[in-house]
Image (cartoon, rainbow, N blue to C red; front, side):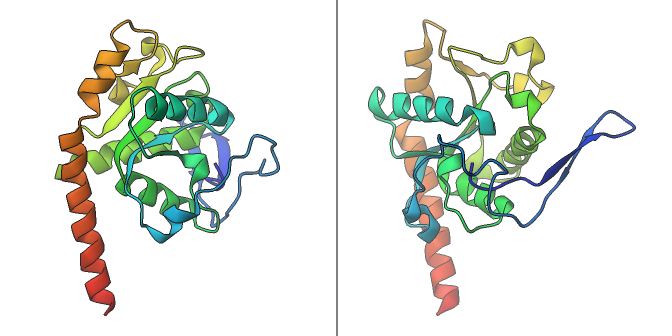
Amino acid sequence: MNATAGNVRGDTANGEKQIILEDSNHWPSEDKSTSTKKVSEAEDGDIFYKFVILHAETDESEAIRVKNLLQDKFNIKPGIIFAEMPAGQQVLKNLDNAVNGSAWTILLLTENFLREAWCEFQSHATLINSIHMHHKYNSVIPVRPKDNYLPREKTPFALRLINALEEGNPEFSKQVTKTFREDLYKKQYEVWEAEKESLEHERL
């Protein structure tokens, strides 16, 4: 991810972690060698992605693998991972663009997911968004990869209520096909296109 969620403080008195959001444009570890190429087209808002993968910072390579799996094996494209969102924007703006600029929001559930408070914030924000926006209903898809996945018993309660796609499940291919339906994508694309045209008219 090329934008930091801010400082994560220690546990508060009631055991909850605090996230202090700042207007910063980089992860603390921006110089990591695994940093991916940024997708400049997304900055212009000209691409409506089929999916975006929200992931822990340390899971960037795994997120890329899952993205390539969905694109190459199942022809679900274009897709993007959060680390590929354009630099130069505040992190909450990037999150908003990622969620509203794609048909499905994938939460990559690994053991690292619970270690980063930013991931918890992402999951809450996307779930609330899917509840309040009718066309986003059922658009949040938890995915457990085949390695280092987050067990169901450790998964936050709200996410346990959603059927997750599990790469290790023999029915994974059928689940993917059933979930990422072209007709659902087209409906969301039409809403996105209408909103985009409305904004363009307002600017004139």
